[in-house]
Amino acid sequence: QVQLAESGGGLVQAGGSLRLACSVSGLPFTNYHMGWFRQAPGKEREFVAVSRRPGSNTYYSDSVKGRFTISRDNAKKMHYLQMNSLKPEDTAIYYCASSAAALSAIRESEMYPYWGQGTQVTVSS
Image 1: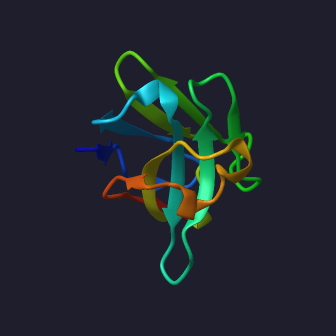
Image 2: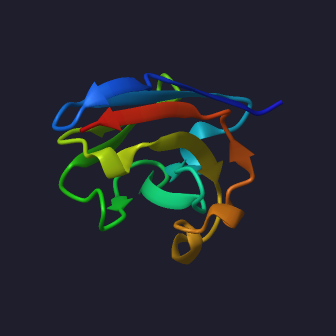
Image 3: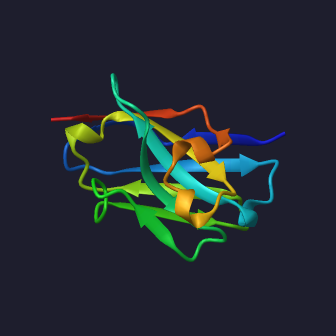
């Protein structure tokens, strides 16, 4: 049984930082891309970042590039999203997800079969 569980969300002031963590079990971790997506109220779920299997390459959305850093610990089966210089528009539910899709599709949420339950991030102005 595959399980993903996020932690680390919360309330922070604009300009602050948060670190999200995602624990993964039930799948061969190094065979999967590890991604982060977010969904704000009234908006569609959007790609944030992904760490390509087994972890040497990372990709970001333009909206978070330079502010967020994704990383993974293959030994612990954990991946992380360090979020710095947070803005009110970063407010959303953040989801971790796992996929074995082709590289060309790793920004597409529908290509991720495994998801965590989500963690709320709220950035106040």
